[in-house]
Length: 249
Ligand SMILES: C[S@@+](CC[C@H](N)C(=O)[O-])C[C@H]1O[C@@H](n2cnc3c(N)ncnc32)[C@H](O)[C@@H]1O
Image (cartoon, rainbow, N blue to C red):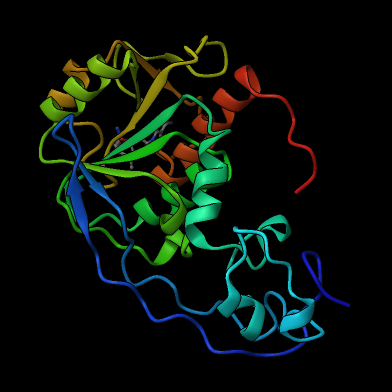
């Protein structure tokens, strides 16, 4: 049995982590073209083994990576992308990403950012923006950062400029005075969902840059929920308003 959908059949070596390589886009935004040290193996039973039959049986379409065909594909990708080159996966995602963006203030090396990047990838967000500290904890991203457009802004002002240039409305997500319930809010299709840091919440400059504030209704005793969880809820609220149910995996 072989090809996309082929079931696991044993271990194989993982890729070496690539170096971070940033580039500055025409808009003056720093975009990460390579991800950090996250291409570690999830486990020995994940993915597919070598494409059966040897090189003569391999597909020769441009999206296929001959090394993956030879060695097997143990990456954390859906079956339709098995054996695909990373660049081919990103290019395919680019044809069907949603128009919403996600941003988080990184004031203290926030461990939630990896979770947020992974969820943004799952929901095909256009891009994720890190505001503040450049370095972030990639472990929770589970390698999804390699397939997600990531931008860094030193300060909120850079994010606000980006949003204005891209025609995006910044929607601050936090349980702050003046916020309206997410459950009944109408989110714009071209939304940039902005989350605060786990320790401090949305900063004053971030709040000032928002067109609207929304909060997730809570009913218990805790003041707030985890920022990564809040981001997942808010992204899914956008999906429910603007996207069709996905066709399987
Ligand atoms: C731990 S909270 C921070 C502080 C929060 N404003 C407070 O009063 O304690 C971290 C981030 O998670 C998100 N968050 C947590 N609970 C939320 C809620 N109920 N509604 C919307 N966002 C929430 C926000 O983005 C927030 O900036």
